[in-house]
Length: 227
Image (cartoon, rainbow, N blue to C red; front, side, top):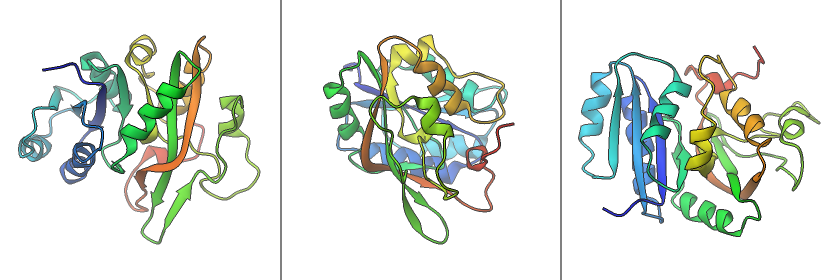
C-alpha cells in the first residue's frame, strides 16, 4: 500500500460510541490518503469491540496495556505513524468533511518549512453552536500572547484546539507531548514548537472541526485553570 499523506492519531479510553463517531468523521474526508491510529489507553474491551466493526484497512488500533494518559497515548501514535503529516483528533470530537483537504492546501502555501496548521471550529454545546475563535491569530503574533492575553471574558475568544492541529510527522517525533502534565498539554506543545527554527503557525479561518462540549462530561480541555 502507498505511504499515506496524513496519519491521524486519536487517543481514547472507555468511550466506544464517541471514538467510533470520530473515526467515521475521518473516513468521510474528501482527502482520502490517510491512516488512522486509535490508541486505547489501557484495558478497554468495549472500545475494542466497537472499533472491530469498522471495516477499513486504514484503521489501526494500538492497545496500551496500562493507562498512561492522553499525552503518552498520542506519543505512541506518533511513533507508529508513517504519513508525511500527523493530524490530531480527540475521541469526543469530529471533523467536517473538507478538513484535511483544506489544511493540506494551507501547508502547501505556507512560507514555513515546518508549518503547524490549526483552524476555526464549531463549539457544540447542549444549548447552541458557536464559531470559535472569536479572534483569530494574526500573522507574526507570538503564540504565547495569543493564548494568554484576553480582551474580554467571553468564552472562545482565542482558541487553538487540539483536534484542529496538523503538523509534520518529524516535528511530532522530535518534539513529543510532555507526559505527566495534568492539563494544557496542547498549549505546552505549541509554545515549545514555535521556538524551533522553521516552525510557524498557519491558521485556516474556516471552521473545520466540531468540538463537542458537554457540560456534564469530564474534559480537562474545558478547564481554564493553569494548575
